[in-house]
Length: 335
Ligand SMILES: NC(=O)c1ccc[n+]([C@@H]2O[C@H](COP(=O)([O-])OP(=O)(O)OC[C@H]3O[C@@H](n4cnc5c(N)ncnc54)[C@H](OP(=O)(O)O)[C@@H]3O)[C@@H](O)[C@H]2O)c1
Image (cartoon, rainbow, N blue to C red; front, side, top):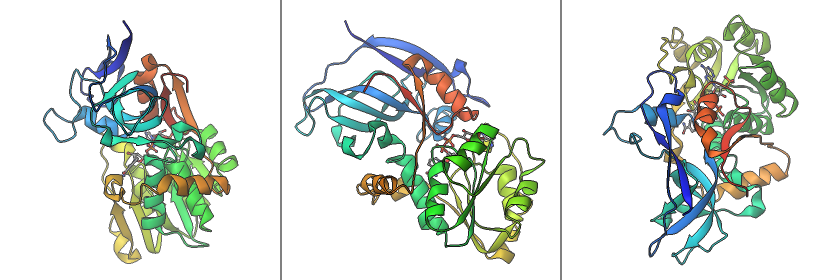
């Protein structure tokens, strides 16, 4: 009998996510009933928001269930279909689970991938949620203008790499921060940022920002919060925009007050939190739009792919710790 290996949530994280939060289980591959689709999974996504859902108490909206496979964005290929809209061989993405095969009983939540737009994994990276997040945050909320100074934290990551390149294409001068020297070199040499720094080896983010953007910051795409956001607040240019995409430096429970929040008054700055789920309108046209930017050479994209379902917990833990160079995915079967 064919088996389906799944990654379960075994315990809710207290602080950093550890291997003890996960367990593996083998179950029979399910057979699709009428109207359902069986998908052979290819790529599983590791996204920072999942940590919050792992930690959320049982019963809390969006909390992942203990002892159950972990829900995630997944790219796969239809293996068996009893639904008129899908045929075996179709490439699809949807909210499935960290597992080798997914039974999709409501295929209205399954989306066909156009393989002519690029590698199918892109459906959950540059042509999917992270890409649209960068587009909304940078272009709709940040609105970078030619000659402005834009700063992006977690600049080499799934979202940050696109946010920075979109700002450059808009004519801005773009500075990035990242957690290793290799990431800083990558951001400069492959992503075309104008300047970048390693926030782990600088005396403080403020010292680096004073050196790299002495005239202040017009747009800050915030992925990390904490001390980096505080340093930016003290260095805002008039009418600065701060799209707040995430605050990963605080997801494991670290706290740290903002001392410089009052600076938004004098700067007449706008600080806007956003969640991509509120911006799903326009998502249908998004993959082709972003693929065209890539074809024009405005955006390059890098994925960091770990092999094997058994390595999914380590892949997620490593992503939260900054091990990934680009969008972290787990490949569980050949395309
Ligand atoms: N608002 C939304 O709808 C939305 C959607 C998607 C993602 N997000 C947010 O966007 C941010 C980036 O997500 P992503 O998917 O693109 O992940 P990612 O950047 O590919 O991976 C996470 C990165 O965060 C950095 N990091 C980890 N701990 C940190 C710390 N203490 N201080 C500073 N940086 C730290 C690490 O890079 P370094 O080595 O550079 O530290 C790590 O590689 C996250 O905050 C996420 O929650 C929000």
